[in-house]
Amino acid sequence: MDPISLNRMGSDHKDYTKQRVQVKNPYLATMEEDILYHLSLSTKTHNLPEMFGDVKFVCVGGSSNRMKDFAQFIHQELELPGNPEEVTDICEATDRYCMYKVGPVLSISHGMGVPSISIMLHELIKLLHHAQCCGVVLFRLGTSGGLGLAPGTVVVTDKAVDSSFLPQFEQMVLGKVITRSTELDQGVANELLQCSSELQHIPTVIANTMCTDDFYEGQGRLDGALCSFSHEDKLEYLRKAYEAGVRNIEMESSVFAAMCSVCGLKGAVVCVALLNRFEGDQITASHDVLAEYQQRPQVLVSHFIKKRLGHVA
Amino acid sequence: MDPISLNRMGSDHKDYTKQRVQVKNPYLATMEEDILYHLSLSTKTHNLPEMFGDVKFVCVGGSSNRMKDFAQFIHQELELPGNPEEVTDICEATDRYCMYKVGPVLSISHGMGVPSISIMLHELIKLLHHAQCCGVVLFRLGTSGGLGLAPGTVVVTDKAVDSSFLPQFEQMVLGKVITRSTELDQGVANELLQCSSELQHIPTVIANTMCTDDFYEGQGRLDGALCSFSHEDKLEYLRKAYEAGVRNIEMESSVFAAMCSVCGLKGAVVCVALLNRFEGDQITASHDVLAEYQQRPQVLVSHFIKKRLGHVA
Image (cartoon, rainbow over all chains, first blue to last red; front, side, top):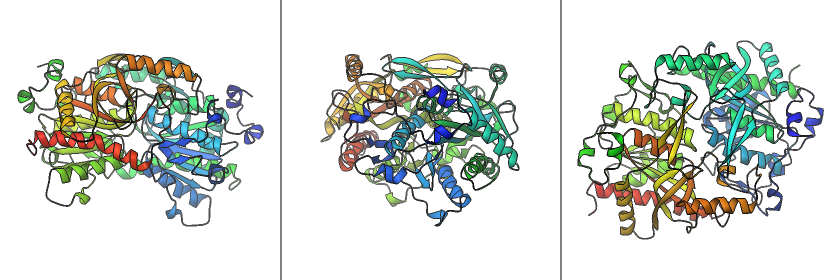
């Protein structure tokens, strides 16, 4: 089955559960050792199938504290034995990323921006491949700026679009541009929307997400160290994005979607909007309000995982 | 004085020491409060001139542990009162970046990749502006892949070039590309080279640095989850880079150089090469060897700072 049809096959996941995680690199099979440098793991020094073979859900997010919180939260939700406070960072030998394993769930941080998540995804996909994992679903749990949404709304990404609102990711390879599709799995997105309807207080929409390489000028903010455009220019750009179906803006979804698509992995991007960009640029909500918003993608994805594992009807 | 001539004025730094850090955004002056969200600081809740007004040197690097190590190291080197072990993270309310202040030196982490360092630089430059700092010199202390260099060689960047070997950075602004120069201060680079000649065991060259948005395909690595080119294609691309004067490859220098240039800040990029990419892709050196390599940019920049402060002849 080719990656595209696999990616779009929706909720028919019988075949998918048997599907090994694929890499698209003929050289890997010829390597005696594979050092996953930024995860501080290696095929020679770690028994990856034993450590990770049972992983079915991988949740990634920018902040290391948030991904530790999620590991502790899903530990409680799945009612696993042991103390949730005692989850340990598998990548503690490096400070590039942190990683926690809780039953069939991996929780990993990826830092900010496409390059940072891209390094982690290369090494994660290799890890899942070496560990012979099957039927893995990936989630990005993040924060974002909203467009015309009430702060606190969760956006499940339909398509990740670039700054021209096109559903593509441009990858430089040896100095040349390769364009990749950024469509995400529709079945998983619809299942997440269904989950939100079963929960209280998690307002959720499926919409397009714009992915930028910059938080300030690239997202039309007037409050960076550099700004060469007017308030009117900004609003016109955000209005065009809105008309193209964009409801939130973040900085990692495009390469996440592209790499999932190329490797035939089902993936979903689930980001809460911290503010409405039509009303301002600065994130002014209180710490407590922001903390509650940031739990919403976690609660939603946790419900999805519990349903898949048969913990809830 | 315009930013370009300021940037190229070399060692004539009498005028520069009186030069306030500039932002290029007319909107900032109209804002009642400026929340530096990813640093967890604000003009309303923090007295930035009191906290940061005496900063003269800002050192940034990807890893938070390494920038804490550098803060402790420079504390010892400058023979400041107090226990170097007790440096405290000014940004401890967030895990996006860490920041330490040691006398006139700020040490800040920036994560990996252009988007991650760009968010930090926007907020750092605003911080230095709000704090009314003068004559600040910025250093990026990093790691990189070398081209035709012995591992452990330090590269002080002449020009930061893109994957087509051009000394430019393409910034998306409201969906359109703006091209910015990535030339760095020649005076500071030459002073750093002079410093290396005064130290033992810090082999140093001035050369071009290629900045990419990806560690694997974008740098021609054969060991990522995705690879669609041959070993020969890779070597041909690296040879072309070498012919264009590139001696190392990393992931942050272009936006660092571009933002320094636009804001009239003197900046230098000082990265050690962890391996020779003509010989391989994986980073196989031992932990101890890598740790020693990573100290070299720190030792070099520390010597520069001590000389500027009159601690050494």
